[in-house]
Every structure is written in structure tokens, then in C-alpha cells.
Length: 157
Image 1: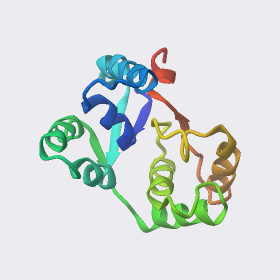
Image 2: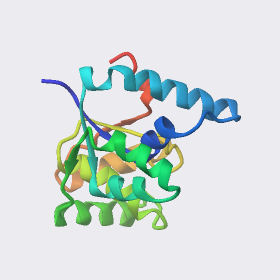
Image 3: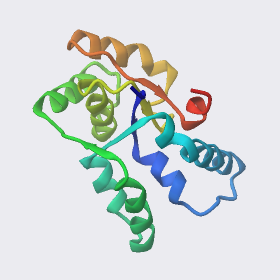
Image 4: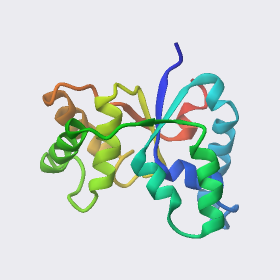
């Protein structure tokens, strides 16, 4: 069985965006594209309805391109259990209260038993200083937190 990966919206944005002038963002885009080349061969990929909703926002052509990517992945259901865990992540200061969507991404991956959450959101999700709090809140609720990482970190898996 392949490892499971929840693909957060920022990864899809990096796949669909025009190459950026900022060299760091461009490097992230290249790493994401390289990971994507074999992602379906190596992983079982999931998104949520929230990811679908976020990908439909903005420029119509860009949204269409993002949706072409999203439609290839399985969709996780948002449950009351996921919403409760997201609220606990915020209450436990694992995710800022201003970022309920980020808490829900983590919660969805955790309650569905997804092994990895891949993201370029290094401020609120893939942030090593938040990691212990995220894991603690998930464990306290009876779930194992996913391994939160960037596409670059999954290149060698």
C-alpha cells in the first residue's frame, strides 16, 4: 500500500502558477513540479472540499488549471470530529486563531489517518516551532498527527 498524502492548497498553487521571479519561490515551484512527476506513482493523494473551494477562487483561468490538478485526487470528507480537532488546535495554540483553515487542513489529515500533509505554508502549518503543539493536541484527541512537510522533503520517499 502506498503512503497517503494530504495535498494542501499552496502545493497546487505552486504547480499551477507561472514561474516566479523570486528565486526562492521559483525553487519551490521547481521542487513541487519534480515531486508531482512521480507523486501518483509513489503516493495515494488526497485533498478536501476546502482545498477544492480554495482552488476555485481568483482568476478564472488559473482556477481552471488548479481544478485540473485537484480532480485527479480523492476528496476527504469534513466531519464534526475534524472540526472539533481544528478548534482544539486553535485553543491549544498549535495554530493561530486567525488561521482556522490551516487548523482544518491538519485536522482532516489527522482524523482520516493520512500519513503526510504536504504544504508550502511554512508560517502556520510546516513550522517546526508549532510541531510539538500540533502533535500534542492531536494525540490528546486520540489521533496521530500527519508528518507535515514540503514537496521537496517527499522527493526521496
